[in-house]
Length: 63
Image (cartoon, rainbow, N blue to C red; front, side, top):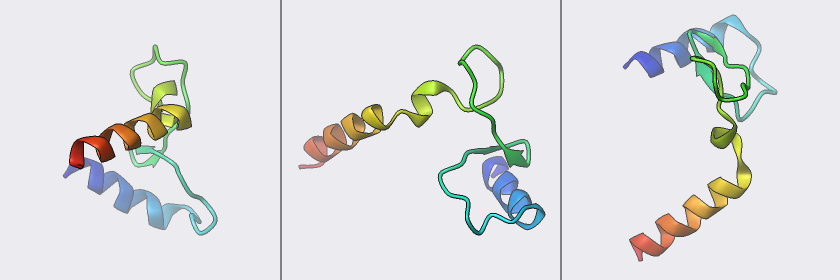
């Protein structure tokens, strides 16, 4: 429920009409990080090659 709350609060506070593929945290758009900070978007969370690999693995497991 906490994650949904953040997304609902962010939307009215910014013009997100032309914004896509963002992560929200603490009621704001999260910044990308090197991965060693407590907050932010980790590099692996925005890696398109890893996303494709996960998609193929999921499809194979689902049959």
